[in-house]
Image (tube, rainbow, N blue to C red; front, side, top):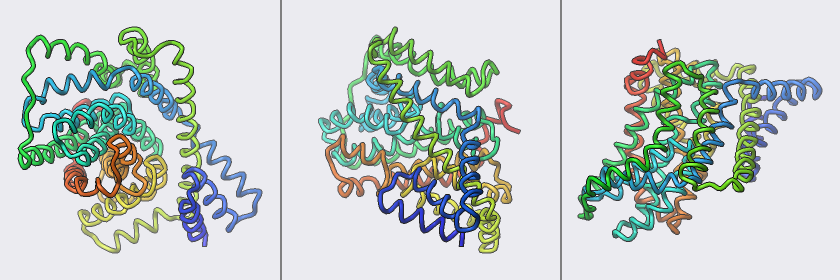
Length: 431
């Protein structure tokens, strides 16, 4: 009865367009009221919400959000695009490769797929249109490429998973995301290569050594943020949370003093936007943790595990089923609540299959990243369509091979632990 009330309330509210955080909170409250008296129910929900956000690890999220906003408005996109052109712009279909690399780098630096889509897409989509790329292909490529940055640190969603999983090392997750993120980018570049060959796309000119050096030096300070954060964590200089504060100071100095793309008078607006985003994320975390507690109290994770294991004893099949469920969930739900709600449900199943929590977390984030560019709720997809001035219906056809490429990367990450665990083990961050 409790589970039915929870699911029905959540689905109805979500269908009516109620914000996800309120859907989760109200559904949890109604489900609690079905089983216990109002006083204890409301008190328990309040306690679980407060306890859910009372985590030192979550302190890194507002810091990385602020550093991402500073980097996003600091002229980073243009410099990264120029740098990417120096690397791959001279090959046939080079602009498509430039798009993938630029979105990956900017997404990693800013920590936001939406920011990467709007910043890089604003430059690359018009440039690709001038080179006779289909508008819909450019929009689809920008949307899918922007999600790769969510796997490459600093990544807020990996921090959220670390909290939801009950203690997986943030440092290990950060380092473990590198190879899967690069793998997705390479798979998308494979789609670009096929597209360029079939349509006989032109190659760009070869840049001179002086131009290459200039663009590299211009982009180096931005790229150094990734090295600074991960290098400091691996070297034991600071924790992942302290790395957020370091990232803010570095982004502030880079955007205001070195690049001078952000004026001092703009800082209050950036701080306000960071506060608004943080408030939304923390409300999602609080309500999702309350729902996760209710699900655990009702033994839902145990029931799900028993059902899946009874359905099949083949680990490959069970992991495939989990992936398909998460792909469906990602199409209708934002990443943060999806991670918070479904980690306690599916992680015990994965552990019973001898899958490490680190490996499962990387797989889950990669899986849900696909949902960001999947209708009907894909936020990145809507931003990309708006930039390219096209519609969701028109973008579906060029999206299909990119979905296939991302699904291939997802299967490799799912069934080959090397991609997620090799670097953390190499640096001694994971046993």
